[in-house]
Every structure is written in structure tokens, then in C-alpha cells.
Image 1: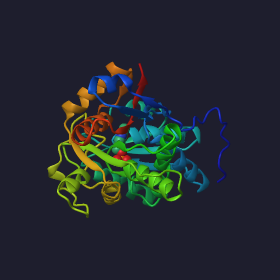
Image 2 (image 1 turned 120 degrees about the vertical axis):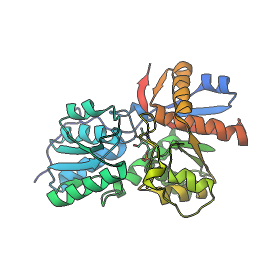
Image 3 (image 1 turned 90 degrees about the vertical axis):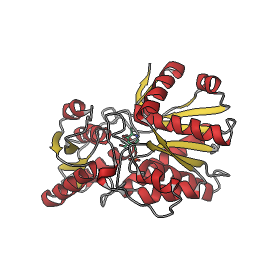
Image 4 (image 1 turned 180 degrees about the vertical axis):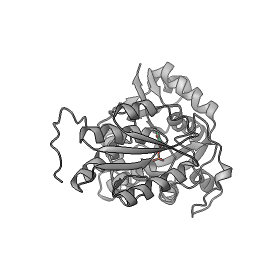
Length: 321
Ligand SMILES: Cc1ncc(COP(=O)(O)O)c(C=O)c1O
């Protein structure tokens, strides 16, 4: 099947998001150089758009009519958005227990939602099986097509370097599967190797105290990721994008944190909600509470290593208010 023609006007490209100096937060938190890389400015409000368009294009080139994935909501909205532009259908598996507030948006893009019993990790398995059995394009995290994901997120590092003119000392990233963090690290590593920058930032992995093996393994000093048991995690409506007992890119993210001389922090729901309100009041940025884990973690780390460090937070959300 031929790839359908898509006009540039219809296809709002991902990326090119703003880097905002958070000067009010600097004053209130006594920080020196604090920036927000606002991924909420992507067409569907998250960094997922950076990989979804590439998946949909690859599916179109491969002659697939249907794309399959499991999601907590954000990735599903993003793939469904681009699939519709390319005239493709998306089947999205969401764990029934998840709040996944983006269900109606996903359906508004013409995607079908399967409510699946069990965990997020099991949903990825089910959607991968359905893709294989029905010859659908598999864009599940960790699928055979997931090379797209790491290269897509590298562009966040490239943009930060060109917007700032150099690589910052610290970059703080919300972590679920660890894919975003691993991709961003890879971008900085390549820039360093090619001589574009003279350093690789220390990367902070920010996740939920409800449970994530990347933070857990780093805190315990393990070099090899040790997954948790499914009964060790506690999901809530706030922490869903970050909760995990078997992250698809856990090892890559853990290695990235070590290689960058970085840090990993757990953040409670209360802290996420607090910093999401804080960034809205201080900077007029409406942030997804889960992504505000990156602010909370950075504040903790900077408090320990020095508030004068130059730090960039990767944040998603609904935009500036
Ligand atoms: C808005 C948002 N931020 C961060 C993450 C975590 O990204 P990753 O799974 O690549 O670690 C997710 C995952 O769904 C997300 O939806």
C-alpha cells in the first residue's frame, strides 16, 4: 500500500518546544539558573509526539492499516492523533484500573480503546500479541520498532543545546519506562562525542514513590536493573505515567544516570501536585502533575549539591495560562 499524501498544514510537527527561563521560580526557590524545556508545547501536549509521528510514518511505509499499543493515556493520545492524519486506525490498550483521563480525547481521534484487566506491563504484552496475530504495526514501548523512540527523544537534547548555546550542568527528567531519559542522555552523549558540547549534563531521573525499579536500583547502588514485583507498586491517578515494576528501558536509563554522574529521586503524589501548582502560579505554566516530579527532584538534588547549578527541567502539560 502506498503512503497517503498528507499536507504539511494538517501534520503539525512535534518538537521545537520552548526553553523557558523560570525566573520567578529562581527567586522563590533561591536558584540561580533554572529552565523549563516545555514539552507540553507539542501538538498533543507531551514528548510522546516526538516518537509517535515517526511510528505512524513507518507504519504507513510498511503498508500497515492499524497501529497497536498499550498506554496510560498520553502515548495513546499522541499515536491516535498522528494516525488519524495518515488515515490509519489505532487500537489502544489501557489497564481498566487506570484513571487515564485522556480516554475521550483518544476516541475523538477515531481510535478504539480496549480496557484490559491487569497491569500496564501486561497491557503492553497483550497489545504486542494482538499486533503479531493481526499483522498490526507494533508501537508498544519496548517493541521491535522501539529504535524510533530513543532517536526521537535525542532531539530534546539537541534542542536544549542549541537553545542554551551549551549543555547545562543538570537535566531533570520524569521517568516511567526510562525511554525518554535514555534518549535524552544519548543525545547529549553524541553531542559530546562529536565535539558539539564540552560536557554531558548530570541527568536526574524523577519518579514516583509508588514504585519504579530505575530509582530503586540506583538508590541501592545496583548497576544492573532489578525489577520489582507487580504487588510492590501502588498506582494512583497522579502517578500513572511514572509507575512501573518492569520498565522497558530500565537498564538503559539506569546506565545513563550512572554514566552522566546523575541522580534518581522518588517523589510523592503530594509533592507532584504541590510543584505543579507552584510552576503554574510562578510561571503560568500548566504542568502535568506527574511531570512536575522533575521539578521536585531537581529541588531536592540542587539543595544537596548547590543551588547555583544550571538546571533544565523537562516538563509536559497543557500550556501557558
Ligand atoms: C507525560 C509523561 N511524562 C513522562 C513519562 C515517562 O516517560 P518514559 O516512559 O519514557 O520514562 C510519561 C510516560 O508515559 C508521560 O506520559
